[in-house]
Length: 122
Image 1: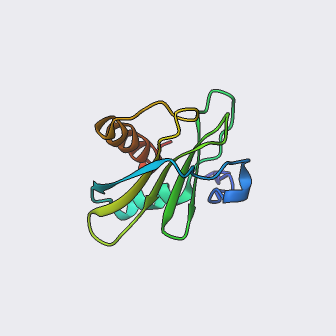
Image 2: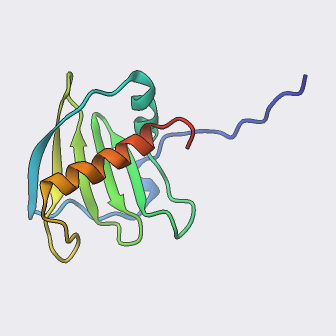
């Protein structure tokens, strides 16, 4: 039986990408959602873009997930994971950095990103 070569997997770190801080113009909301241990493992790994087509850089720092647009380095979402199903989300509202102003759209976009990060097959 052949041994499989496994790539070294390490979690993305804040200094892996050039980023900008969350602007003072932001909004906060609660994200009510549970995550399995498997999903949280993927989320904790974050994501370092591999090509120009990759739109996000994501990294954890403690219990906070930071999601940045990869091209601009602008922080779009900050998710503070709490015990239980209520997590605090801060979203960028600087119109020069992020044009969305609808929390429902942000929840949908963020859930899609969290689903993708939490998917072990990515």
